[in-house]
View 1 (cartoon, rainbow, N blue to C red):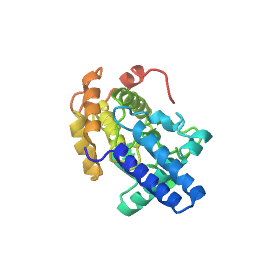
View 2 (view 1 turned 135 degrees about the horizontal axis):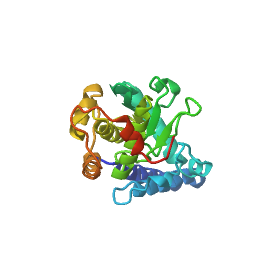
View 3 (view 1 turned 90 degrees about the vertical axis):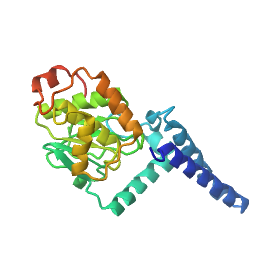
View 4 (view 1 turned 60 degrees about the vertical axis):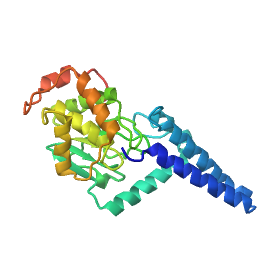
Length: 258
């Protein structure tokens, strides 16, 4: 599965604490305090993002994709670090901000600006808990499935996102599923959506379809486990190459997000 976010942030927390101790020993006690605070926040995030806890709501992201002031203040060492790191990593990779995996279906990274948004005013399924929503058009359909990086949305969250996405496609609205880079969390949701829309027989074939359009995707064991659980507990599974039923998408979806 590789190194998860809890391990990476733990290393960051330890590094910040060592730096705090070093500066304090030099006699700069006041200047060392921000490093101690950043270390404590990093440790808290590492704990909350561990698979055995997995508490993305800790960061305070609202259902509309915004962060309350208290969250921005308390978790600023982590939230702003993630934004900077994401921007630098994406610039270095040179990867397109999004990829169209099928007509009207897009998967990609965090749209930090409106220019990185797919065309057609798409409905957005946001799989991040650490990055804010970028407002494009007033009234734009939006759903947040808050998930830590390298972790997976829960099967129930995948199902909710799939139903919501199916309803938008039934209304002929494009759907854009994104996480930080468009490699893991968003791909897991898009795999399920492709299956539900009848464009792939199962999530494994859906992954191959996505990889053909976006070569650098890399789902881990947690994503695959969640998709397996989602597949087992779905109410129905469309046949291969079967056209998705618009009426069933609307009738099976309970009233919810618009």
